[in-house]
Image 1 (cartoon, rainbow, N blue to C red):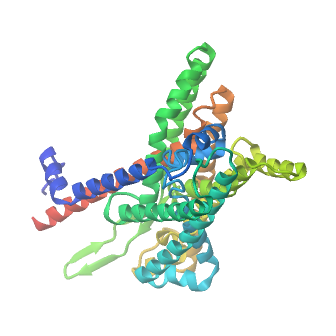
Image 2: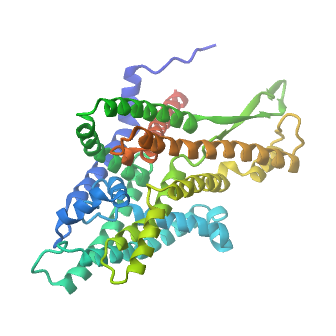
Image 3: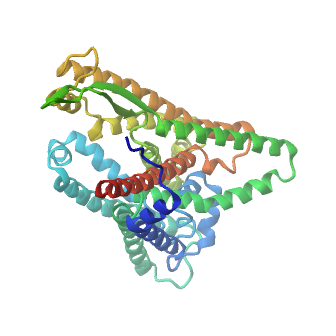
Length: 444
C-alpha cells in the first residue's frame, strides 16, 4: 500500500504559487492599506484635537476609536467605520428569523435569496450610516471649538454628513471585497486591523503608568498572564468540537463490500466564532455611543442632564449593568448563530442520515434522531455560550483587580476578536492549500 508523504517545502511553495493564494493575500493587504489610508484622512473643517481629547477621556468613544483603528479619534472620512454595516447585518439576520418571506430567502432560495438579503443589508446600512452621521455632526456642532472658524456651518453640516455616510459605505464595500476576493471575513478583518493599530498607544500609556510603581509592575505581569491564559482558552473554545458517531450501512457491489465504517458529525462548541462577540459589542455600543455624545452637550435643564448622565452611566463599559447585558447578549447570540447555521439543523441532518441509511448508535432513524441531535446541540451550545461569556468578562475584571485600566480597551473583547480572526485566517489558508494538494493528488 502506498504511503502518503507529508508535503515538503518545495510542494508548499508550488501550491502557494499555483493555488491563487498569493493573489488573495496581496489583494487583502491592498484593501487593508486603502482602509488605513482613509482612516487617516481628516474630515474638512474639524479641529481633531478637541474631539481627540474627549475620545481619550471617554471609555465608550475610546473603545469605538480602537475598533475603527483611530478613524473616529481623527474624525476622518471613515469615522463611522464598519459599525453601520455590522449593525445592519445583525438587524437583518434577526428580522429574517421573524418574517417568513425573509426566512424563505435565507433558507429556501439559495444563493439568489442570500444576494437579496445582502442587498437589503446594504440599503439598511445607508440609512444607519446617515442617522449616525447626523447624530455625530449635531454633537460636533454643539462641541465648543470643534468646528474651525470661517466655515459655512450649513454647507459644512450637509457635506460632512454626506462624506461620513459615503465613507461608511466605502468601508462596507472594502469588507465585502475582502470576503469575496481575499482571505477571511472582511468585516472581522477590518476590526482586527483597527485593534492591532491601537495596541502601541495602549502599550505606551501602560508603560508610562507602571514605570514608577513596583506594585503596578507586578500587577501588569499578573494581568498579562491572565491575558495569555485567556487566549489559550479562546483557542480551545474555537477549536473544540463534539463528535457524534454515525454508523454507515454496508453496500455490496459484485463480490466487494463497501462502507460499513463508522464516521462522525463534528458540532463546534462555539459555532458562531467571533461573531457573537462582535454583534454583542455593536448592539451595546450603538445606544451607548449616542448617549455618550448627548451627555457631552450643554443642557439648560438640570433634571434632563441628570437623566442623561444616569442612562450614560448604566450603558458605560465601566458599570456592572453593562457587563450583565454583555454576558446575556453573548449567550443569546451564540444560540442564535447555532440556530441559523445550515450544518447544525437537527431535522435536516436526521433526514439526510435516514436517506442514506446511516444512523446514530442506539437511536432510531427519523424523528428520534432529530430529537437526540437537538439535545446534543443544546448542551454543546450552552457550554460554548457560557464559556464564551465567562471568557469575555475575565480580563475586564482582572483590569479592576490589578488597577491597570489602560489596557482595558484591548481586554477580553479585543483578545477574542484578534485570536478568533487569526484562527479563521489560518484555517482558511490551510483549507486553500489542502484543496490544491488534493487537486494535484487526483490529477496524478
